[in-house]
Amino acid sequence: KQEVTQIPAALSVPEGENLVLNCSFTDSAIYNLQWFRQDPGKGLTSLLLIQSSQREQTSGRLNASLDKSSGRSTLYIAASQPGDSATYLCAVRAGANSKLTFGKGITLSVRP
Amino acid sequence: DGGITQSPKYLFRKEGQNVTLSCEQNLNHDAMYWYRQDPGQGLRLIYYSQIVNDFQKGDIAEGYSVSREKKESFPLTVTSAQKNPTAFYLCASSLPADLTGYTFGSGTRLTVV
Image 1 (cartoon, rainbow over the protein chains, first blue to last red):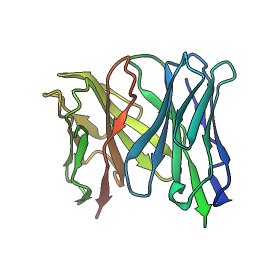
Image 2: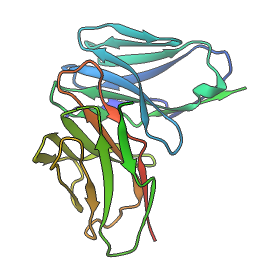
Image 3: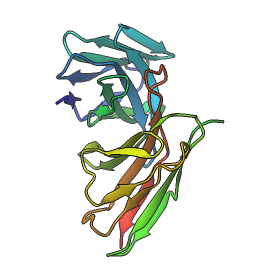
Image 4: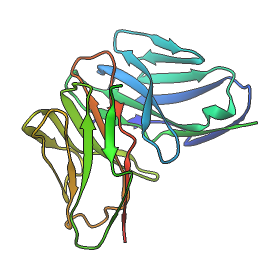
């Protein structure tokens, strides 16, 4: 059974810092991996989707990498801002018709 | 604009009542999903449907029921058999083998009073 782990559960950094959020998964046979952002009391917003054949994806200040062989993905946030404060969730999909398996998320706080 | 609409945003249920949460999408996605989110537990899959008139149980289906009569709609009923229904409920949709991943609604917060 696929398990997705995100450590630490919470992170606090000063504004302007570059930071890396980690995600690990136990079964490397994945179809794709998706990073989401969730603000308090809100739904999930998709940030980046990496297909199994890809190594990384970029969107603005965000860069997500994927290393299937080691069962790891990282979300890099450049020049963090207070508006980046949210919970970041990682999820993996085993196959084209499979459901997502989620990590528990990392709650990020960016201090002004 | 395409998206997923969940309603209501807040819902209150009395003990012993059944309540239904609505989820509608206009993305032309084939698959739809219901997740439950509790503090410290992450998202857990309740039910999912990959095609109209067909659905499967997820990890925590007991006390819940769904229907999929239309491609656009996937309502979730929380029955009186669900002993601890207070949670945040999220609906999502996706296409198989797609390049866009899952799309989520804004959620419904259910509280037992």
